[in-house]
Amino acid sequence: MGSTISEKILARHSGKSSVKAGEVVIAEIDFAMVTDTRAANTIKMIGKLGDQKLQFAKNTALVLDHYSPPPTLEAAEIHSAMRAFATERETKLYDIGDGICHQVLPEGGHLTCGDLTVGTDTHSVTYGAFNALGTGIEGTDVSAVMMSSKLWFRVPETVRIELQGQLQPGVWAKDITLSMLGRFGAEGLNYQAIEYVGSAVAAMDIDDRMTLCNHAAELGAKAAILEPDEKTFAWLRAHGARTPVPTFADADARYSQRIVIDTSTLAPQVARKHEVDDIVSVSDIDRQRIQFALIGTCTNGRLDDIRQAAEVLKGRKLAPGVRMIVTPASRQIYLAALREGLIEILTTAGASFEAAGCGTCVGITNHLVPGDGDTVISTANRNFQGRLNNKNADIWLGSAATVAASALTGFITDPRTVDGGTWRSVA
Image (cartoon, rainbow, N blue to C red; front, side):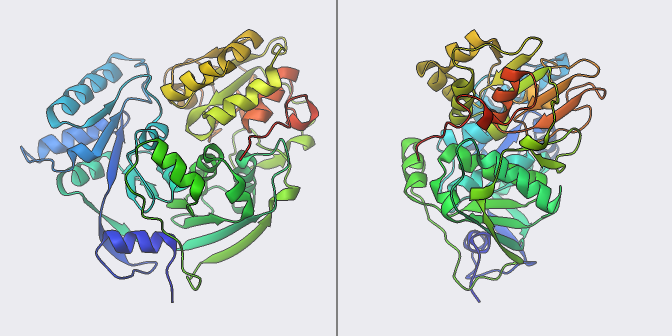
């Protein structure tokens, strides 16, 4: 019996010829990441373990992205400790405004095909867009990795999802991921790895592939992994990544499920208030008024997302009473959007830009606090009640095109019904 992509990566990193689902292995890590929400635990645990050499420190990045900028003295002190630790241990540091961990790691060339990468955030599954096994761990786990370069794993079962057909204009990977949540439910693929394959995946640009993998966290997935192709290799070369080790599943690999989905019939989707898996087509929503629009986050803060919004809002204004915030996923994305004129288009339309980071999405920095009874339409990955610090406000989720179209009309709107809403990037 052959092996899945996850099984091959874990076997190679644990020095075995093969492993199977359910087996526990000790595997070598290629790169580790810790955000400012878990760094205090990491540093504290290393201090408890004494003055030991951290042989993996240079293969670890500290990212100041959630408390960015720090909203409290305690957060500022955590940042100071992270900066001091990075200097002392020669650990890579991404400071305030550099970007979100899941964007700056691949941008910085820290991972490649076939890698095993861990980070202190559930959305570390994003790295599967590059044929790497990425998964979330705790801050104390990073302490162990920094000292030993190793960590234990239970090999996950894998579900193979073949996405056939061609997405229609105005429909994006975000809509696929929301439809997956509607199908399986939140945590519906708990601790399983997802292999996304098929013609729809092959047609996607890297930005959309990252969205596809990122949202697997809401499904409870241990990892989400794509097969590599020339788009993957070109992107990795452009960002200085190491030589890739392309990894494919065997034809006779064993899967917990094999699912085939025709994406050509998929319409824009939204997750309704408070439930990440309460999914309906945008066209089924009847005149739901909005007051806030958010484009960004680790799920949909990339250049193509900003382009989608700009196509809809070019030469127009936000609907009266609607506020829009855009948070690029990294400084590099912001600069690219600036060079393309996208910042001017969206600012002229009435949007405001935040520095690259997670604070607005999670509600840590309090830069987007809706009022009682307000409705937010967001490209974020979660819409839990109270996530933006007001349990009396509602959060809906959709693609950047859907969010921009809604900001234009003042109601949750199918992007295909407005000019610019059917724009699609060139693969």
